[in-house]
Picture 1 (cartoon, rainbow over the protein chains, first blue to last red):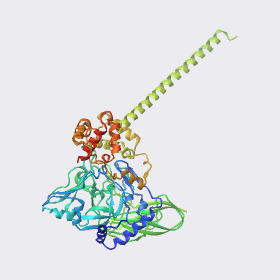
Picture 2 (cartoon, chains in turn cyan, green; picture 1 turned 60 degrees about the horizontal axis):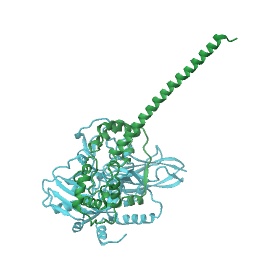
Picture 3 (cartoon, each protein chain N blue to C red; picture 1 turned 180 degrees about the vertical axis):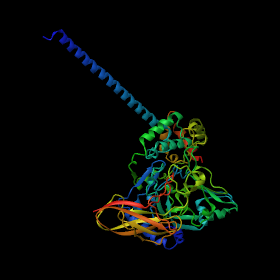
Picture 4 (cartoon, one colour; picture 1 turned 30 degrees about the horizontal axis):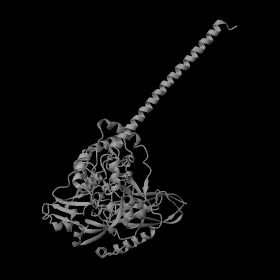
Length: 384
Length: 215
């Protein structure tokens, strides 16, 4: 990696515990590059939706080239004109910022989990239309940039502001197709962890992942992490339109299929729920009997993961896995379990609990859009 | 001696036998014509529905966005109606046959499709933006604007942000891939005609330059 004083400056702003772990993981990946790399799973060719193979989740940071890719309408053509971020609406002064203008603001780097609200949609029964993500529409990266609140304060937030509307260049193909236009409440916008990111895992934010600027909203689902951010409008109201008023809603109370719900029965998908994934062994693999390390990650939306338990055979006891780091809000914690594997067909399951006392369920309650699947993870393998 | 009655009954037997055979083969050939007609009808409907799909859906998204779904007839109906509301130019009389075709071909009772994979390297290769853009210095923007209004706006809208039959072109990646853009203009694609006879290289340059300026 090319050293740069700017990157070093950003790293110095990070809490000490992140740095050695992140660098050691990144260094490990460089040597792995020579071997066969796992492939991503294509869920849609155009617009491109591609899922990360779960074996990549055996490490803290998800490398950019494996990070899942998702948008509603595909990336814009970049480079036709210099990128600018407009700030307008209920502000004392409108701003038109270039990326270079961020230099005057405090740089922040933090690790955060990005998960698509629809990750796991394929597992809901009955089947739900939409992108059929399974386990890999999620990843953890180190995001660098500036705080949204610092940019908003430079513009001066007016007293009657209540929401921040977000315009990204994920633009629809037809005038009748609704734009992917959303907003976040002001309280979330001014949270110090909400970032305007320009770097991902130490590299300039790649175009496929929303570069040059995207929003980072740790603990909240991916529908808020607007890519290719162009304009931020401070307002009294939420963003109007389909993708805020109709899309990304779940029932306030779990409701089975077939029941008609009124708008007042619904709430927006915001905070992620508690979830864990088994990175290895991978589904359908054959292993040698004896000592096997089961590896995975676990995270939650608000608070932290407090424990991960593993079950190594159907009906067996739930045993505590080792958390490999102190869990931190907004990011995930890698975990490990030393399994003494005996011959036979095995069903491995992992179950996380968080600081609110929430536990992964056997089956996530059905919702018509297939959001927030977080059922106990499961991998079948054969031990010989 | 067989006598006249013997040969008569044999002759009658032959006539009845032959008639029965003729009737049976007539009946079965009518049945098989009817079956062929049914097959033809089914095949015709399938080809028509497939054409509806290609002409009205693939302008905005890839085939696998549809073919990977496994939905009930009710769900297919809702999806197609949503797409029509969002701009799919599907003629009203083609809607129901398309829904039936999709519900028949991709029913909720069928297992999900095989997983399709791509290497990280190949993905980056396909989707990385080009390194260098030709500044198109010979382009005449005013001419490009005029050419767009004459040849493209009917389908792509007056501001190139999408219209009845053509997608939004503004700040979209094909504008960065000059060779592909020119090929597309010359040859057309699905419902878009080829303009080779009408747009020479300079006209293509003018159009591309104007399109690249739109925001």
